[in-house]
Image 1 (tube, rainbow, N blue to C red):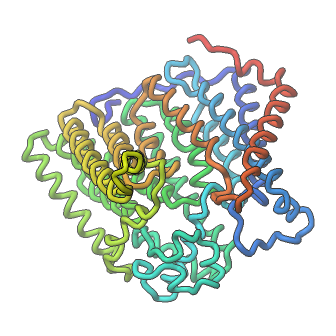
Image 2: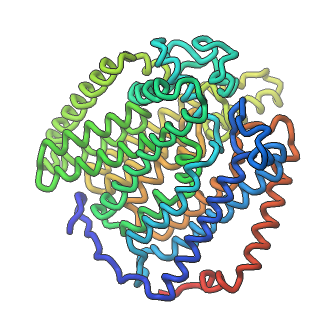
Image 3: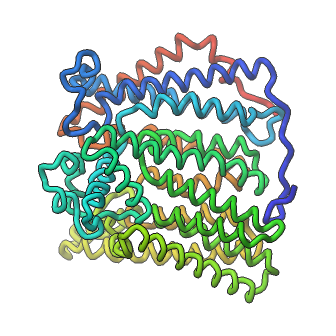
Length: 511
């Protein structure tokens, strides 16, 4: 079967033999135990609500009074899930004579995900901002004009859960997401835990869309579907930051990938209804988070190649995508009642000046150099300049990738992943879960061992180094080193006790 860029989809490999199935079962259980530890440890090591209903509850409230122990349990679970995921990768490695089946990957994902559904939010407090912004919308106020403190009051339960830096800022998300949030708030009111759970169900719908789309897109672009599922849906960054962290990136990514798959179905043979449906779905993803709109450009490139590959075809395709985007955006903005205020709040996140963003880090270095040379403190100006330069460079890179995709020099999904990576890495703010915007498209189109090793290493490192609470530990600087030290010792003891069972998994494979 040929993909849309002329590649060839390989046939499925033979199923795992008996010994390999037993090894896979060990990997599954190892990761499931890690997920259970995360669920238990989150009771004291998570980003708990300001008014924690577990305080004072026998047994369940105990971990809340022992933050180092709770975070140690969480980090032990992190180590177990990440190590299980790394070993699982050997069963889906391209070129291997026998690969794990789709059903085996699905069951593994289910076993690792179910315990995480009941975790207290971790790694970020963004979900509490979602709840406050949803309540603002439910009250008929404009979340693009008012922040939680102004709209709800500083003493409101939902406002108190929002990090201080975001209490006065309007919502930076698309109107479709706030429309979902408004319904959520109408159902749960100002009750924090039910609100968190409903928002988690929403991102689980996004995860379901990712699981549906990834293997299908991978088959189109010549990548083993189970390999794409492993690197994409089973990635610890997805489990930690989409499922546990309740980030709406999961919903936006799911809509984007589903839209691409639907549209590609309309290219062989050309069926305009499928193309329009897919493009519409992509724009709906952008109405949750705007980076999803980049997929519309690469879909336009694929359509132009299908129409004949001339510049005229490219212009026709671009015009069609622009019309679809304009119509869908207008309908969503008017139907939700939020209007176009979201356009003015897209740069809200840039108020955070983090060293994780390369342009911001360069700006800090430039400002610091000026201070050392006695030229005065021009840090703010330097950060402004470097951020603008970073965005200009990212736009140039995106245009180059679109052109190369149009000329058939690279796969469109490779271009999309690389382009989103450039936009986010060179943007004013970079969060660990932003890596998924590049990782998931690339997982469907890149099969090379170097990329696989790089993506695997980056995912594992980021998954391990980010503290689970999403807070500053209230000045308790000793909490993190104590927790990490305890987790390392515990994990080491578990490995030693299980060495006879896991020894076959650590042997080097030969193909």
